[in-house]
Length: 273
Image (cartoon, rainbow, N blue to C red; front, side, top):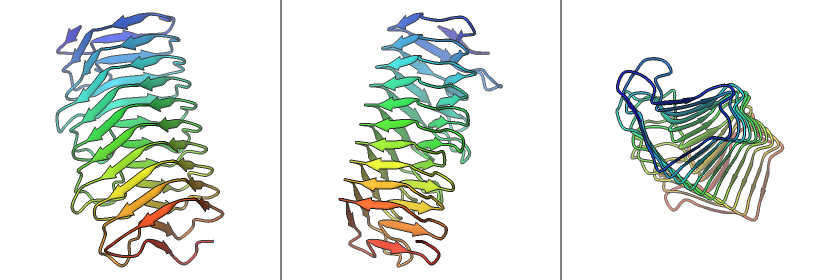
């Protein structure tokens, strides 16, 4: 399924319980909503073992009340520097992406390879590989609550500072059983729990940053880090493997390991409690 001037496949309101299997979807357009796969307002669709490609736009968008849709065993890609994201979920809940690969080469600092935006809840990304060669890999926005990323690998080689591999701002989200890397030099944080991101849970996760903090609590409150490993190789005395920034309070750290051979392992800035 190919469209070099617009979207390749759209499953719109009322288009429910369909299956697309072992297929290719390509959209080469760069205008608004010229996505390779667009699922909007529909329920229970299954996309499996497929190749979904939009070099200059969004490869997969799930939006406008779409629920219970599944992307399974698929390769999703944005390959051009002017692309947007491999996956964007907006105002859609209880969708699942599993056993899939999502890659981006987009250089934008606004979008990540995977974006879960406001109004999206209870979505699950599991057993997947997500990468962005030049920028942020994952973003869970303020207003995107109770989503889960599990048993997945997130990695970037970005050399842009202040762009964590994954940034979490919504409430009650969970990262569990993941491997999260920021390998850029100079690079940025692997996991950024940014204001407000209350009640976030990071558990059984390995986080590594080559030149910055592995995980930062930056205005995040009432969150929990457990059974995890955070490793940094930052020689900057101002950065630690686990770093609490001013405005972070009432968080719990338990049964975890922190290491920074080149600098501090744990740092609390003033104004943290």
